[in-house]
Length: 137
Image (cartoon, rainbow, N blue to C red; front, top):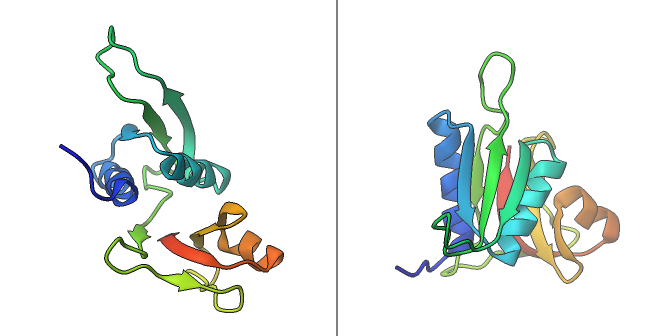
């Protein structure tokens, strides 16, 4: 089965894993998914991630990303929510002056720019706009 929107698939798997209180989750690899997971790790929404190459012996036929999810000491998820904004049917682009803040800057917006995938703070600092991929809080 082919996936029409790999970014939405990855975001949904992460969101559902947090809701089900899982410790780890695996998502299919793509360059944009890897960049989003890297940002989630830098922003301390996840503990760590690992890229796993294909391995027929372990029955891994596609490149995967294994993510260790992060919880507080009381067992609450650190990542409260993650939402896809720009979709294949309706792309959302923002310029550097109109980059939205997520929950009064307690969350972050992830953008794809011509300088790479970055959070809203970095995009404002570099004065670049781009596609508003998702928001995390």
